[in-house]
Image (cartoon, rainbow, N blue to C red; front, side, top):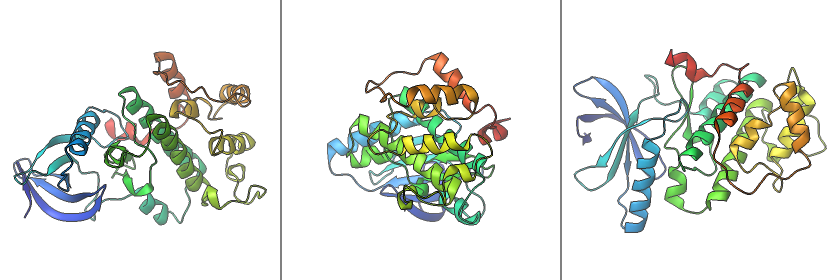
Length: 285
């Protein structure tokens, strides 16, 4: 049995990010949690980088970022992280699992809502100076209420240290939109022939279909894609105002300079999803 403070292991799960991952029971409170137990890190620079990133991530407070509850070292010197347990009695459900359960495709509105949730989590993390780099569906969890959660936000970048901040910011945005395209159309964007109309978003959107085609084409262009998640949110064609804004921005390359989101930006970003209730709101109330 693995122990960490008041937590005792219930059963192991598949590892992630070079960590063991176990379901833990808080023995006094009788509540389930997740334990991420890192391999021993002999490089002191890497060890400090990962520890600092975990501490930064622990300060993130967003409905779609898995909350870190405790951080420390076990009696063997391995870094351990405790989070809430978002799974069910059968285990964790990843976004990939959900897609398989749903037959390989979500409803278009669901896919756009989920993509927006992840983009908003990136905007929140960027305000705290935390970036993740490319996302995979295996590290995106779906909790018992249907809320999407990023697991250990920013850790992949800290572990691999292979992207500059600018590249990590752009790649995390692009990867989320690639995931959104897959969820909405049932096909990987990389597998689509550019001249084919077989799986364009317009075939599944009830409104603004051609604008969604143009938005995804721009977002997934390897040379002209968005550099920040805020840019992606601001130009999503969910209403007439944003369609006009998107049309204005199309000929102009995104600014290279990073900017901190202002309160006005936040309200605009929130307005984008006013028609799509966040799943996180439902289980908070």
